[in-house]
Length: 373
Length: 91
Image (cartoon, rainbow over all chains, first blue to last red; front, top):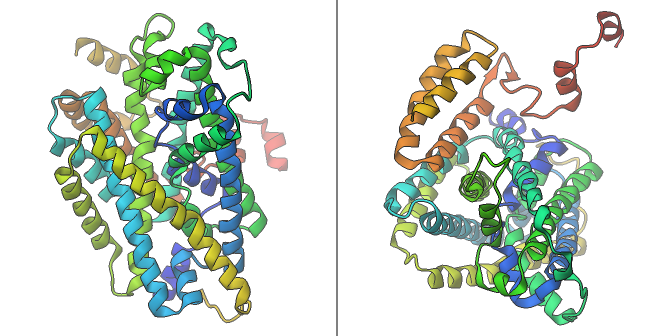
């Protein structure tokens, strides 16, 4: 009975849905702040920095995919147990779970602080976190199949955002970007390093790739295309901000995309587009949060077979709720938390998959026929 | 508030299925409460929850949002474009 449930849960996503999931998990963070953050480093060539980060993440996708290629039916937790043995593998899983919980906590914190700053300044924190809490619990405990369906629909707001930002090109000054390639390679790479933060969420590939019912090539194609899509969206946003604002302005305003939207009025009927778009941006942000909660809870079920995923989702959500309530919400402490998180991200996105991959090449190729599920 | 209600009344004529009217009216109340407390953010969260619930629904093993939510371009095209009966039965 349990075996059949496992297969039901497994292999239930199409490559197109994989595309949606990766896009939704990745988009969210830094969509509005990216061009300001990059401008400190790469000045007028910020958009090249985003492209560099995109190329780097294509390599990351390739590494994650080839790890999956060695064990097509296994997600990262099972791969860790398979390669490192039960004890060390479970320890690694625990680290991954903590990392995912940590990021979901950070997402919640980020959401709350930004919403408080832009939209609802006098609403108490508990209500804002409560909204996230309810959404996370309701969607986080669902099947990956249902989350994938939802992610497909949730792509509409991102497309809406892209289309509305298009209106900024009425007032574009292309000379702002004109000395292309003057800032030097070091600054470009520093900018790309900064851009990595907004690509957070790519870890979902480690987990979800084993749920896709398709051959390996189309899995890779979907994952790679989704990263390409995200790269194009970010490059487009950064480029728009660069041609719209003068360099001095861009250094001063922390959320350039929102400032840009504020000055646009749609057909001279709809004003203050920034507030509408900002609320719509909640949708990709919640999906990011949900994917992290999902990943952490799935990891917990692999630790011990008696663990119920529903309870783990509740546990994580309550932890996030309490943690966000207690953590200081001024800008500096949130930023310092973000820095810690990026340094962790290198380990968990890049180093551990590479180590596991090399280990899988050192060990013999596992027998495929022996695996029932 | 008046404008919102007027817009809702006008857009209720755009609902193609008459039976859906009751459920839409029922769903609109929690959304209205959310909107009055939290503004647009509340509407967005309400819509997220409702949309996800609809994504989860499955009637007779076929998803509620069938050609859209597990996106299938061919079926989507078929539900928008209706070919002549002769042509479509040939396929």
